[in-house]
Image 1 (cartoon, rainbow, N blue to C red):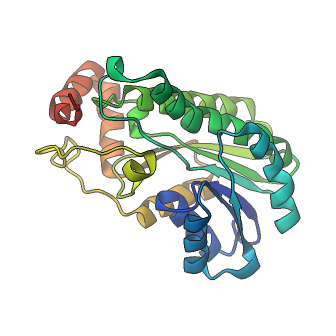
Image 2 (tube, rainbow, N blue to C red):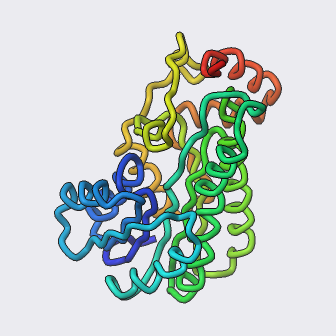
Length: 269
């Protein structure tokens, strides 16, 4: 997909991977509508971008379906069209076993990670289908195919995003919309702070099966954008995601046990 002079909506555009996706698209000549909960974070993105009217910012909670329904009109008013949607916004859960989560904890993660994606896709898909070429990119997680201790609901929410996106890919094959699901591994973002949780330090956690380093958000964003440009169905971000994708296919139970043992210290008891 060509990026220059196209219009992209990016959720989670106020920081982390989402901010870097916004900056990366703008650097490639696109117009971008950045969506986030925080005006302050969006202002930070705008300051870094220095893109003038090629960037619009929209303070919207993706769990508010009524507010999301109003987004397409606002984006089209600012930019004239919509050529792509990139769902990057997401949160994690508290690092506790499933049995210790409150219903509110579970619902919050599902509302942001899954229902937020559902809401934005429902709102923007009719507009994408009218374009000569368009892109729909949903960010899932390596946690969608390998469970992490203390993140069972987070993983389930991202697995739901994975299958939803794969279903959309199957349904939209004969349309102008190319659909991509993204599986980031370890990326240096502030998702724990944004989620209102604290991640415990785990001895040896960085010495994982992939023996890889944590990616900078800008590098992760570049991989995502290049995957979208190619119209890739699946994008694995980071060597850890690549290795664990292969490992879970080859020996799924062994992979699950290894991660559970290696990362057991994440559980807060």
